[in-house]
Image (cartoon, rainbow, N blue to C red):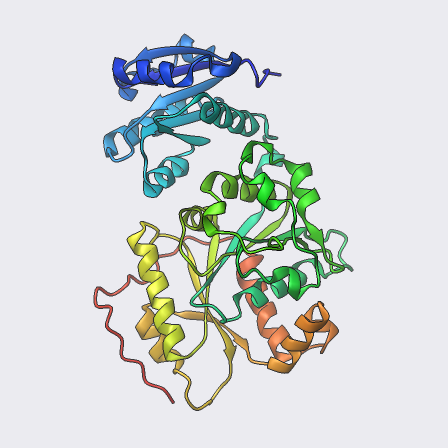
Length: 407
């Protein structure tokens, strides 16, 4: 096995100035050996002995250049057995997303130092040494819960969906699932299940390379249902405490060891929230059928489009749904305003849900076969359990002005 502390790195740079700057910034390379070359990505050949003999490829790329992205994809295909790190001058979140989507294991911004390189190399070796073949194909489904606004009940849906996933004890194989509560300021998943807060989270943010299967399992608080929850910290933390690298490491590790990974996100928009959404196999946008909530849901969709994430598979969920309630927005009007269908409606049962939260249990322990549990089970069976089928979603209208009628 390759020693992660003494790696052979093949660095391909666009010009000598970039190569020299990299060597100067990274100093001694912490025991690694760097072999630098100046060439275009299009000049890299599949049979290159220099690259074949290396442990890691470090490729200098302009993520805003479509031609270079095409060349990078060809290199990734030609050297599929090598972990590839991309490096670029001050890449934006969208740039990082494009590069990760192509298949690089990490993105190293320029300028950078030896510590940055060391963290990227350890991420590369974790990806390289991860189980391949059948084991690698068994990656958990990642479902992100996106709030139209605070208070719409997205955390409740995430918590109770997780309980439904793991409750079927009569089956020989019970799906494993975990819930990652990244709402580090208002996170309530732990409170919903009477679980302790995660004391260690703040101390681990600066060391994403430490994240592995055993550490993640140690961080999870386990509910009696069998659901593992990464609870929010006991004290309010600035949202900037988390960063894209750490959030990606947690999600990737969870997806490697769990069948289902549920991700509860804050209402506020951050760089790492965009990364978490991009990693998801499905995004559930939770709203209520009120004028403010539907308007906020539309704003969330517009923000996704503005951030280059319009292609994400988003399913709209109407929570606390009740037929023929005065003051609510009709489904047809809400769908017109959102330019998307509302695929699922979770029935309103305030008393049952509130009692489940207060006791820290699944809905079925309060009232079996309730309408809210039945509608939530339809959501879980229809979205969370099932593979995402590629489909064309309706495009968002260019006119953001909405007229919503209420009953």
